[in-house]
Image 1: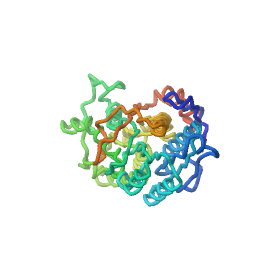
Image 2 (image 1 turned 45 degrees about the vertical axis):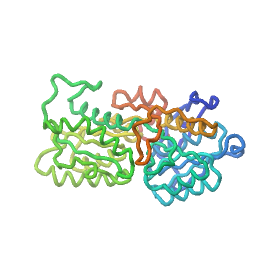
Image 3 (image 1 turned 120 degrees about the vertical axis):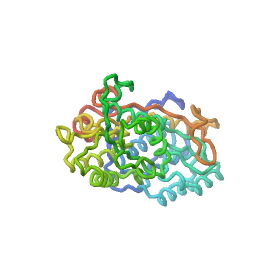
Image 4 (image 1 turned 90 degrees about the vertical axis):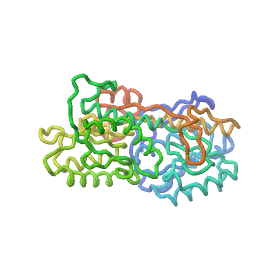
Length: 391
């Protein structure tokens, strides 16, 4: 795992803190997906211990997030206990318990299951430890102090918009095309894991765009599966998405009809979907079974290459360097006896309270803006895009 992408330059303890990117991130090389220690000697004297709980190392974006948060906090003078839980809920619970026992002064948590940490959050509250929910909203607890994330409903809107761009119904700016094809277009829908609150925002945002076109017949979901419970993918697993796509092709598309588009909420799922389609004879250069328009999220390098090659159509770029920066700034505010700045105090109800939040913006990546969005910003290098492998 290259760490140069996540180097941090601290300019005091303010929002001016800049996470500089000099190279690409990507999948980690650590074979142990359960724990990885972080921190520096002497950090506790400078700023105290901060626990950072990440869900897994099986997705390159969570490795990127963890390294970025750790680097920024370390540079700002804190000791950091960074742990990855291998997508295992009891492991994450135990890791957070240990952080509290070790004297963490703040917790930054990206939960595996947003409803499974009530005991740990109560222990944190009893110890006066502020809890920052990172990207995934922690639910059903009053002991969540702040939430940093992207505008997840808008992410879903962007995914659906890019699907319609690929089908020729909208232009790249999201405007209706005057001479757009009439359709109907066969599409299938995929959603994320039901234990991840974000999955609902992504899906609801996407359906706010797609449902009117499903209702008027422009888009046809041949499987009839349009509820999130029907299209969800437990733990966001690529293999699960591949199997479901294979089943859909067998059950719904054995009559000579073809798939024109697939709403996929995450690049890992997209690659599983693509594998199923390719195994069924779909290809970029096929006249009979051209590759459908396939969306994604997270700008993972393997999918960025697929977009450059015309296989996957789009992804959503959520610059995790900015998210890590906001988490750091929020933690610092609490440790300085202040309240973090929120730009949304209405949207994110966790079932017990509306959690004050800071929302960041995201971008749609197409083949023709990979250079401007991802390479010029230093998120990936041109060489990484060409190879599809992080350096």
